[in-house]
Image (tube, rainbow, N blue to C red; front, top):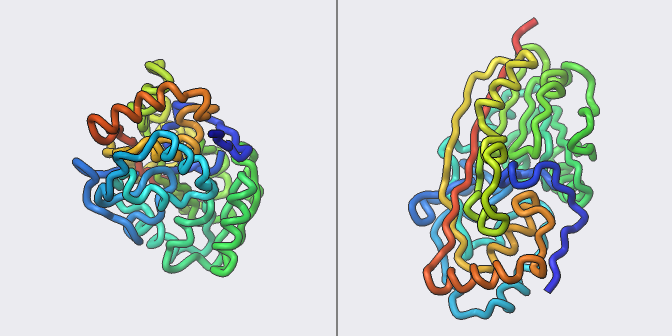
Length: 313
């Protein structure tokens, strides 16, 4: 049993939690057991988490080897999380990012989506801005996003996540990003037009840390607080943006079999950096037994919504 990392590199480690970003981050949230489903335009395609809705069928009784081999064989390209259907659940945030993003896109004249992943969330918008551009740093996702977004008239630009944005100053009146690995506030402020808006859903502090600490042990306090939304507010204000909305949410996740855990850690690579089945086989086997005897493994994802505006000149 081998796990492919597909050449992706993590910029953040476990401090980043689940999110869209190797590929852009991303990943969502649920209710007591799995919560009410908010799939479709309200929440869009998940970037970094299991599917929402009911918990689905049980995989109890399948062997550890069978479940893990199936998870290892599954593709981790893009940010399609449909593989988790019936195997894991994650509650969606209450604000409905994809729907709200779509409303803003419909009123924009020039829009940029940063770290678009496979383009799934941007493509869910009913109407794009007349000029819509997306950036992505991971080559397999660039190809996926291009295939998905070009028919909609959007341009996909291959751009490293840690490089300056390859656009002129004041080029866009709307910049969006769902689950960025890191937010480069100075670059966002630079490419926004006066009066323009940045709208983003981001991974919050200590996201899915029950799972992270199961494999890595207790994490330093600075890791737990690294993605505090108040830090995002301060960073936005430091570059001259006015924060008009900031909302956190902590949401329930359930993993119903060990295959779902393996697939999640292969796909959201910064949760347990350098994860392989071989390296963590003992912990995986122990967790498999725990799920089989006690039921789903419970964790909590953390998200926040931030909207910031560049003042008129």
